[in-house]
Length: 187
Image (cartoon, rainbow, N blue to C red):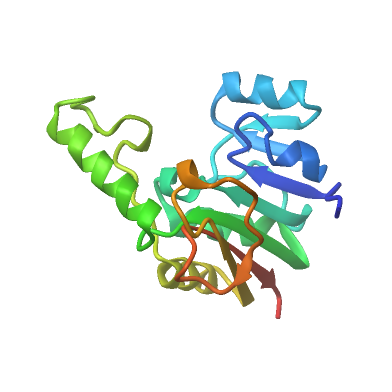
């Protein structure tokens, strides 16, 4: 398994992904989440994706897993990721495809919770006013931030609750609800 000693996970949360991948640094706005990530051995910095507190070219990898829908300014976050990456570094973004069965379900549930009056200040529980992206929208944002050579893989072709074994990723998108894209800087 690759190790990313010069890697950054934006939206590190509890360190669930950064720790097993040996991503050195995690960034999160939540002190509680950072404490959990530190317990997993991830070094953490408090901050937000739209204004990364790191010098340009500091990392070889920027990882974002299921954080894109929480970003207030997705374009700014991806520009910042490009800024902190070394030349020929890579961004890896894992996200729920809005057009997939799971993406449509989350959008529907978010709307239902809002209609039921939950959290009238932004509604929908954890997803709040989240705006999930389709892969073509993600590609456009990444390309606008300066990334190229985009490669997509997908998994989760059935509802997570119905899965009985780990599903291997397949190239592309359109059949899986969870999509991962890798983009390169400087090509």
